[in-house]
Image: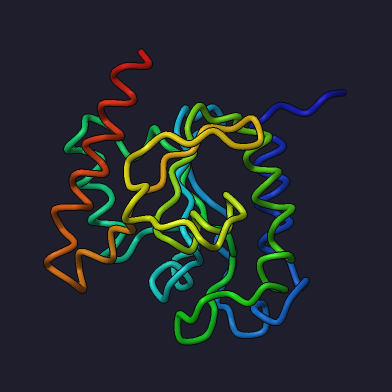
Length: 190
């Protein structure tokens, strides 16, 4: 019997919650697989869970997640209609960048989620997620913010991470511009 996409996503989430592939499992409160519909047109991918996400087991629930919800609402998207996940599924200590072996440990989970959902657009949130998914450490999220990029048969839209606007007021306008571009892209594809 073939599994449905929903069942496959649930199986990946169960694997993530039980994962011990890297040292991040040693300090986590809980793993954070992802959340959203199995048939979402849009997938958002961040770097890794933060403290709030580690405590609640859901991605983007802290201040950056609240900002993301507002940014989505501003372009007519309900958060419940998108799938949200991270490159790494466990919180790195002190919110440091994940190490390459930690990324490699989670890579299969993220690729499985992408294969199950088959989103029309994958929006990377921040430099780190963009460079990891596009496999190019020279890319600048400031230059590519809100632009379409085709790679490996997938369509990406890099966006500045919503947390950047929480820490630096000068980043708020570029963040809004990137999401406005995303709204225009979605409108043109309907």
